[in-house]
Amino acid sequence: MEDAIVLYPSPGRGHLVTMVELGKLILSNYPCFSIFIIIPTAPFETAVTDDCIAVVSTATPSITFHHLPPVALPQNAFSSPKDFPALMYQLATLNNPSLHQTLLQLSKHSKLKAFIIDFFCNASFQVSSSLNIPTYYYFTSGTNGLAVFVYFPTIHKSTTKSLKEIDDMKLHVPGSPSFPAKDMPEAMLDREATVYQCFMDTAINMTKCAGLIVNSGWWVQPELEKRVTELLDSDKGRAVREQVKAMRDGAAAAMTEGGTSHVALAKLAESFKQG
Image 1 (spheres, rainbow, N blue to C red):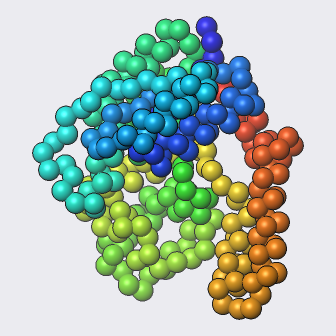
Image 2: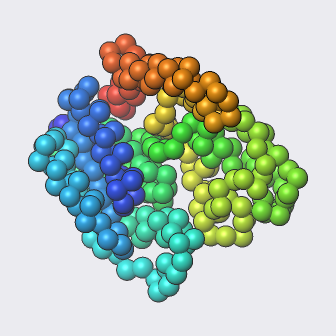
């Protein structure tokens, strides 16, 4: 049986493309794996996404796409843009029965070494855990955002109020600069909202999973933020642009053999093999 890695993105180009690129990156360095990408059918237009899938299927035959059947959403599930995050979480929950069957079918012909999920697919953690498939969360934002996200349950326990009600409170999150509580993402401001609990459950599960994958040049971010501020507030623009170029070149070098990102990917792939 072949060793395979299953990727499970949220619907939509922004989440699918970055997950596909992760799969291509794994294959380019470790062609011993096969990549399966399970696509939930979205309740919104995905023509651009379909085009992307067609191109990848032709160019990279080692990546195979599996589409889940449509699910029926409750009426008024999406009445305003604010409902969208909760809708995405709900979609993952409704797809769990089909996902379970798909993973069982894939496991008949392949050894599923890892299951990598988008954080909006948090509900699938229950399915993969029941099948004893090592599960990794792929966090599409930067490391500061990840630090805040996994610390969210601790923030929740520190107060009985919604963060939107606290004007003078600053949050001190390990790995992130301090910031006002009211500057948290909107989905985290109202503890009575459905999406708030969805984010909470996701953060808790992320601390239980096999590992976290974050797409970020962690060593670049603090210095880059500092230099961008200088660019906006002073006349040091030329020197800053040269330094930013050097950082960009350094980020590219990180993906070359022996670079920091290349080494991290090698360690991740090795953990898949041992699973």
